[in-house]
Amino acid sequence: MTRVSLALLSCLAFLSSARAGQPVDFFRATCLPEGGYFSIEHKPVDNANVFWGKHSSAEGHLKALAVWKKNGFYEGSFVYSCHMAHGVYTARVSRAEFSEGQCGASPQSRLTVSLDNTTVISDVVFGTDCWGNHSISSVEIVEGHAGWASTDMTLCFYKEGISPQGCGLVSQAYWKLNETHKVDQSKVDNLVKDLGR
Image 1 (spheres, helix red, strand yellow):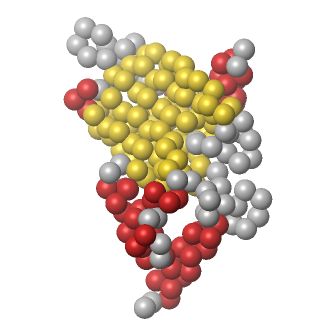
Image 2: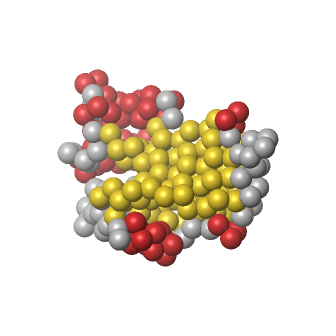
């Protein structure tokens, strides 16, 4: 067994102890070009459902996560691309490292979404957040067809990183999303406050 393999296994052993009682923070991505539909959403799943029985070892964790990934559930940091009529949507999720400190078992994830070279969502907190920041729980982008050419972007939110706050149509573009539709963390904070009124 190589040093890299041993390091990976010891890291997974720490993850399983750090995660005890914590849900696995999956992100589910859906790409349906024929329907002009792209979405990415936070989907926490109980640890016991993910790492069941034979998957309780460190090596088993990798196998279990691979099964979930095969079915569209991504975990940790990843990049997901969806080729649609108006271009390629790319979602980049980056998760902080697990640690033993405050919020170490629930590291923050951040999301950036771009359409080709244009950023439409810029480095926002994604999923639940132990630090209490307002965050996005899902993104849905629907491109219009034929007689209806607009593109709609709907976001759902967590208030203070934990309480579902609702959803709203954030952007509606005549043809396709551009920089004027960009959502950053300050816009997320304002949208959550508006929904709470």
